[in-house]
Image (cartoon, rainbow, N blue to C red; front, side, top):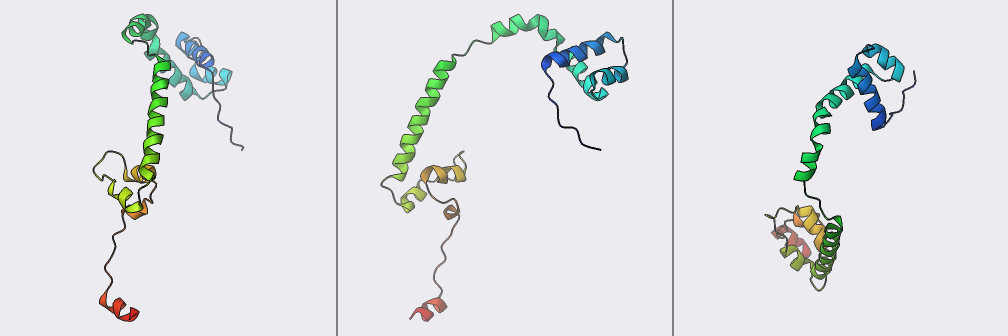
Length: 143
């Protein structure tokens, strides 16, 4: 038996099936066979239709309550902040050695350590490295 690929149904098709289920002229099994859909899917769409039916008549109040957002202004602000981030990222990496950049890491900050390391251009693994002192035995081998 071959497995059927996942299908995406349009909102219009879902509404048509759900309305047919609400009418109750046919059983779920008959509707499932007619529309080639599982009966559980019809039940879910019917429940969504009935839950959202109140919104059809109350959408004017909801639209008035939500003020329109100026998308152009938001896009401009995003662009401005992106430029600022790039500028400061370049400045953080420029003219600082790795030790100075490591010192800029704030372990208590909300930004994850991996992201801080990425922004500063240092290896994330180097944040966790704890240097060990050279043992006396190793010093003896060197000389």
